[in-house]
Image 1 (cartoon, rainbow, N blue to C red):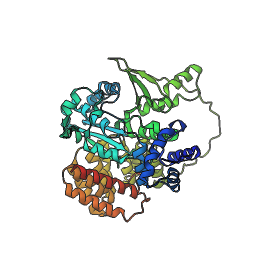
Image 2: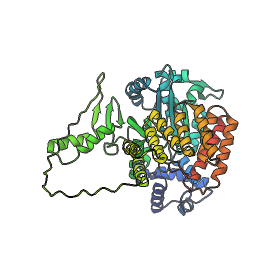
Image 3: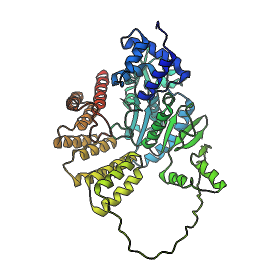
Image 4: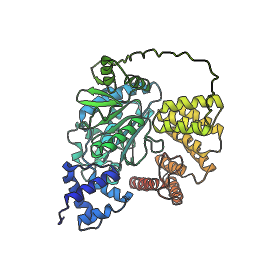
Length: 517
């Protein structure tokens, strides 16, 4: 780089990146920004970095440009079992209790590694679960790894690592779960590799939680050393979405340098030896904390402030507990008035009811959706649109048996709605009932042969069960159908996914699948 970039232009470019991607480069990080600029200037075919910056800022970034920028401005520093005390708390407390409870019910676990980089973190989780669950083949386990950087995802899909990825790890890790290649690298065993699903996801732009991209009803979300790269506003938005992505009593795990009483105030902070984790409290206890934040005595005000984000200190062989006792509200004086004819409240239309329920759903208030819609269906009879939303609310809580029952009722109410069959397929697949999921998706295509989301799902499922040629066919069908849409057009029933974004996901997914074939 022969020409010095002015500080003003560099700050302007940092602001542009923050607005377009959410990546945060304050003045103290300008050196990192300059290092990346040295590379992307050549990547984009420029000799002058200022000319490259001005070209990039001339219009909104394209997906291809974001991918190139992500390859330089996202950090790939990771290794297996990073921060052992975090994994120790995860194993001995979080997972042990989850496994105990789920063993008595549906034997199902869902864990998401957001910003999974080259895959060391989600594979570490898979290895940990393999060691903890002797009958793991009887379980339905989802481990999702997502990242914005396509090069990281490609490397993660290979499952091949250098010696550097094992620094500080116990000796048994390489010995038991990897095989040494002829080139001297280490390839993870196939049974571990199959446990993790990788897919592209932009934490700023993409929608989550979503049944569509499998980011709903998570038991644990890892997002370590990722939030620090976003603007404060984007950080809050991402944390709010993680909160909605978790089931009640689910856990958020962030980097040790990212812990914050303010940023994670909607969670319960739990201190374990050497690690701080964040738990999503139950809705009932969240209501109590909300009630406690009104006008209170000084003593109660202190308790309420504490309850907004209580801190539990882990004690061996003792379950932490915190009870809330909100002060009773003072009696409201009753005025004596002359009796008048009651004015009947206007009866809301079905459309208004649906819009209100959808607003609650998008805010992550799934219990509110269930209460509202169940009552309406009970009072006024079945409505396929409302019942489908009710099924989604149950699914986002991880209550799959309830979700599938309401999905069947939605189909009874409207047997010709292909979306109900696709939703049923999503739930069936999560329950491990792949054959029935495929049947349901084919029924959706029988009703609407142009249903692009059904083609996309069948492409993924076909690949998972080893039908590679069928997978290619369904992906091609989906791509052909997407070409009929404008790239910025939001696809129906896709949780906000645009046609262009789905096309990019299919192309990247197909490329990674071909690489592993």
